[in-house]
Amino acid sequence: MKKGDAPEKLKEFYKALFKAFGPQGWWPGETPFEVIVGAILTQNTSWSNVEKAIRNLKEEKLLTPRRMHALGLKELAGHIRSSGYFNIKAKRLKNFIDRLFDNHNGNLNNLLKKNAGELRKELLSINGIGPETADSIVLYAAEYPEFVVDAYTKRIFSRHNLIRHDAGYEEVKSLFMDNLKPDAVTFNEYHALIVRTGKHFCKNKKPLCEECPLGVYF
DNA sequence: TGCCAGGCCGGGT
DNA sequence: ACCCGGCATGGC
Image (tube, rainbow, N blue to C red; front, side, top):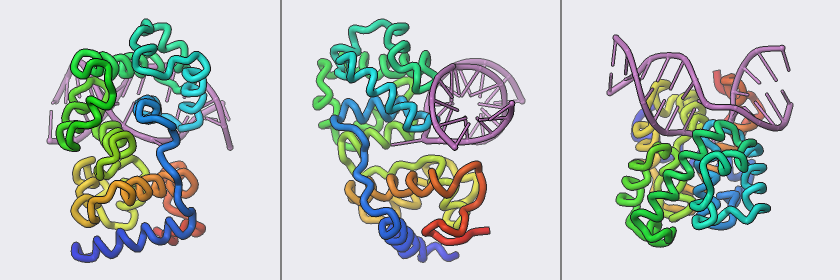
C-alpha cells in the first residue's frame, strides 16, 4: 500500500468500526482523577479487574488525591488487589500523587491546565507512567488530541500493513498523528473503537476473523 | 489447566 | 538502542 493512502484508509477503518459498534463513550470514569487512576491500574490488565479495584476505592471513599495521599503503600495495595501487580501499581499511583502535591499543590487542575506537550513530558517523567498511560491521561483526562496507541492498535494496523510489525510506540502513533486532523473527540472514539474491536476479534494473538468489521485478514 | 489482559521498569547486551 | 524477566489477579 502506498503512503498517500493512509489518510483514506484510516478514515475508512474509523467509519467501519463506528458503524459496527457506535459511539463508545470513553473514558469509563466519572472524573479526571478516576481516569488517571484507571489508566495506571489497567496497565497490561483487563478492565474488569480494574473496575473492581476502582469500586473498592470508591466504597472506601479513597478516590481523591488527598485521601490517597494519606494512605501507606501497603494499605493502598490492599485496596487495589484485584487489578493485579498491586504492589508496583500502588507505588505508581503514589508516584503520581506525590508529584501532584510536590509540584501542583495537590490540585489536579493545576497539572492538567498545562499545554499538551508540557503535560505529556511531565507525566513521562513520573516513574510508572510510560507513553501509553501518558497519552491516555492527556487525551481522556485533559482532552488534548494525542492519539493513544496500545497492543491492539499495533496488532490490527500491522496486520493490515499500515505499519511494520515491529514498529515502536512513536512510529505507530505518528501514523495517526500525521494522517488525521488533530481532534480530541475523534481520537477518543477511534482508540476506544480499536480496543472494542481488539477485545472481540484480536484474541490470543490470532489474526482477525471474518466477523470483524475490518474484514478477513491473512 | 493454561493463557491472556487497554504496560512499564531496570539490568543486561 | 533494543531485549528480556518480573510484576499478579481474575476470566474464559
